[in-house]
Amino acid sequence: MHPKPPPNYLAGYPATLIGQVQQLITQGLLADMLLKKYPHAHEVRTDKALYDYVLECKAMHLRNAG
Image (tube, rainbow, N blue to C red; front, side):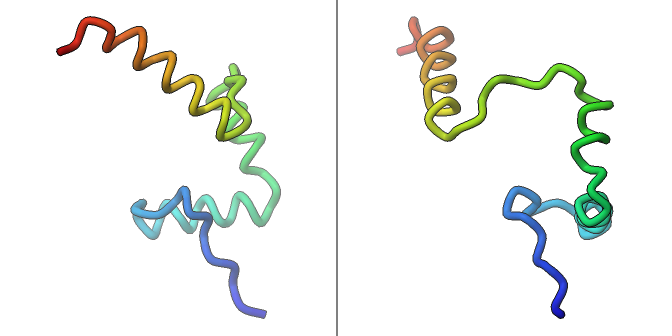
């Protein structure tokens, strides 16, 4: 069996960090580690919700931009 490639969201990170994350994913511990570090999860769960959030931020911060 071939090793699974790292998820796309890890592209561009150092190989050592990717290895650590892959190990946590394999052990099923990544979610627990992230929740300990960031206990207040956001509500953005879909691409549409992310798109709406970004548009809201743009509208709020770029309202007076030229």
